[in-house]
Length: 131
Image (tube, rainbow, N blue to C red; front, side, top):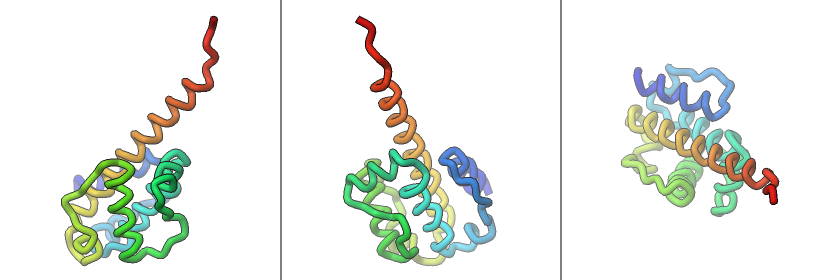
């Protein structure tokens, strides 16, 4: 229950405005969790989407299947230097609910941190230097 609250808070920080269906997330079915991962990597922030795309990954309008899961794990490793304990095979199986929720929470936190860092860079670049 605590991890559901963490996922909810992390997703809200990343701009997710929809309502999380906690019973779907709790069921162990990977599809609702993959929807959140897809949102984080493609829609949560233009900075995140750009970093992901620059690394060679595209998540927008992809089917929620094993390939998206494997690409998400590769993107997490490549873009965020994050290697979860959960494997893509475990993620796609029923079960491992807590590990899936922890993966989403950490990924959302890393996406949010990247967005804030890129926004700070953009703001600093737009400030004119006084001579």
